[in-house]
Every structure is written in structure tokens, then in C-alpha cells.
Image (tube, rainbow, N blue to C red):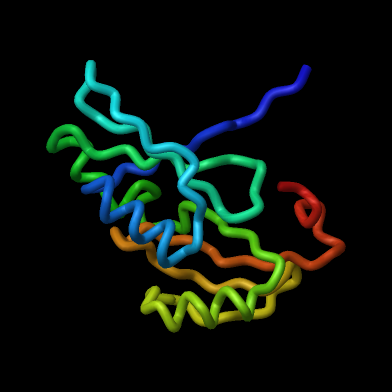
Length: 139
């Protein structure tokens, strides 16, 4: 048996502002942006560059209940983990683009990590794993 998680839905306020952040600041690729007329919504999928793994489905909040979760999908914990092959390259680029790091870079037993917030306040780890870490070679 072979299975995979394909998308993680990320609740956003606005499709275009979310695309701008993820594509122009984080450097993600826009995989799909299709209008779904029957539901009056868009199917917007982005992915980190070079990734063949899980993608983010940018899902516009459709009611007040969903709007309450924008920026707090994990209750204040780190929600998503962006693995990189060059921590310092990406950290410096992101900082130069004004991305807010709320925890500075640290060397941990598993690799180098810093916590940043996306445009809505969701917390992410920017992470470069050590070569001996079990997740190092996974996409």
C-alpha cells in the first residue's frame, strides 16, 4: 500500500494576499489557481520550490467561524515546518523581505531552526535538518 497526504488546508482571509505572501515572500510555486463557480471559491495550491511532497491549499474563510481561525490554526503552537537545504540563505532572504521571526536561529541536536510567522500569524519553523536525522532525505 502507498498513501500520501497531498494537501494541508490553510485558512486565509484573501486568496490574492495569501498568494502574494507565499509566492513572492516565501518563494513558493503557485501550482493551481482555479475558480470553482458552483461554490464561488478558488482552489489555490502552493508548494515550496523543488518539493514533491505535501502542498498547501489556501482556503478562504467562508464564514465567521472559519475567520476566527485565521492565523491561529494550531492554537499558538508552531503549525508548519519548512525544511530547507540552506538555512542561512533562506533566513537572510526572508528577513530582508520583512518576514517576522519570533524566535531567533538556534542550533538544536536535530539541526538549525528559527520560528517565523506568516502574514496571518501562523507559526512556522524554518528548519535545516542534520544529515543523520531520519527526516533528512524525505521530501
